[in-house]
Image 1 (cartoon, rainbow, N blue to C red):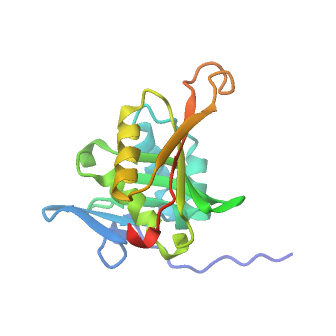
Image 2: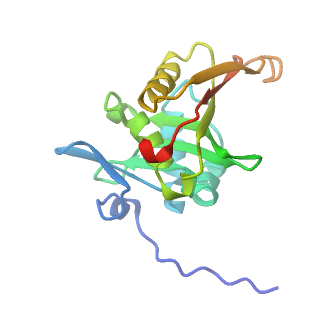
Length: 194
């Protein structure tokens, strides 16, 4: 079997941090942030960002490269003008529930905290045409992660949708060294009203 290499043009991350490529431009005029779909060049930057955001679980650089390529339509990065990745959201539409987006991780680097970037990243993904049939968002949150609870409560309020939660993975299921994870579900909502 012969495999052909793709001939997609290579675009450096700094060049991707331009309004013509970005889905959204947020922040202040003096220091804008650009939200866009990730590219293969972003895998390592995403990995480094997540490492700098405890208590997030850090996955392998390979996993982030897969997210930046195989799941790019349901993920987003935020970069500054230099192309540095300062925010990331990952997730996917569930194959067994195509009206539900499962959000895996949200990371916002220190340089972009306090700007509302986490919410803007989630909403940038949820308002893409690929998400038109999505009416529920799910994620898991540990009971003590107040920042994440606050984000998802704010999203439910903004989207005027109910938020429900229940225990999903126990400490035992997670190997005994990880806090339990609650399944959080927001919806139903209309993506065209976000």
